[in-house]
Length: 402
Length: 176
Image 1: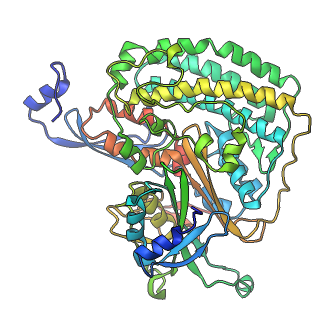
Image 2 (image 1 turned 180 degrees about the horizontal axis):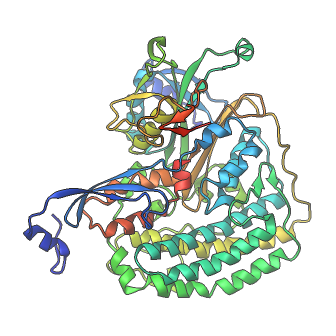
């Protein structure tokens, strides 16, 4: 057993003889982020085994994709990670473009960076707010949603929808941004930037929050890679990998000329950590706190990228490239592409057979692999830590169950 | 992975394991004999640079044309194709492995084709192979816990097979 400190509740647990029991958590549990069911084998307060049961939201989106043209399937990608629908649209659109060897114009490229990074902010805001809820603090949720609402307003203005956008599509985007949108987006960023300090005060440096997350659910570097974890979960364990920089040239080309630093701890330091709260001494690399902090850093990073994209987009003289036809013949062959969605690496696989309808469609979701590591993280933890660990993975059931 | 000599190094280490390749494809792929897939993967994971320490995706494609008119025109025989997307975190390189399997073992409908599991090589494969088993009907020998993951445990059939027919009823719930 690890060293136990004086006030560790586990000490009492060892004195009292208890029996093992199975506890069912979810699928309606408020802190399992949707319809996730966990079966816990516990001895008193200590969890010895965790088994996630998934599939409550399964609708076989892949089979649906085999009966629709790629552009018709775009609305289904919205419903994978419904908190970052723009990033899902982008991942699928790029995969189809890869198969068709199609390249979008400069203006569409910058529009995609602008929109997908803005969606990353809103996704991380939900992740942050909901994580607060998991740990029993309600107010950060309200602060997070206040700002997210403004991003949704901007999206609504651009495409008419607030959650399932279907905005980015194969060959570009469905419509150009309305006049005055860029100014309103900039105004939002100016107003949003100082608010991030509030978030740090509410959660990141909050003593109770640190106690609940630092040193809890430590995911080692090797285990993170072995389980195929990605995104903030992988970077929270100190693995320096971000598909926006390391991915395929079709995707990294989108970020050509953009300056950003991957949010990962290197040699004990996070990028730009001089202006941020310092890492608490209790935190261990790979724990819940680090996963959370990586997301907070990415909010700032995305804000930077949105600013850069606004300038570049505004400087593009040519019109936005037209989306491809609804039924465009797909070449024979297959293509796989992973993009960096807010929750992690979202991979799409498409097999074309010369008709406009793909032969096979596959969505490899990041949350699926990220969730599969729960049973390792929860081994030996307290029941109260289970929501803290599952919440720190920031999963969305829509893309796990597909 | 497009590097010259890579294909030859697999062939040298495992004579007879490579049964085909397409290095000019969009994502160049190498076809491995079904029985050898686990040992080849283990080698790819433990060899020197590039070390494929991570598995991105495991999936299966069902090659069956259900329309008899179109089936007469296609150039391939019905089969299942396993696709493995490997990733090297250090070299930032990808590698695609494919394995051809019969649709049914011994051509007896209902007998699942079998392939060695790679869950012992990468833990990612654990859930991914369960998903392939659940939706495409491939049995993985040596898998630690092979059961359905997305569909209910008593579900009948494999939805991603091309000849799958949706049941009309499930426990008194109308399905279509």
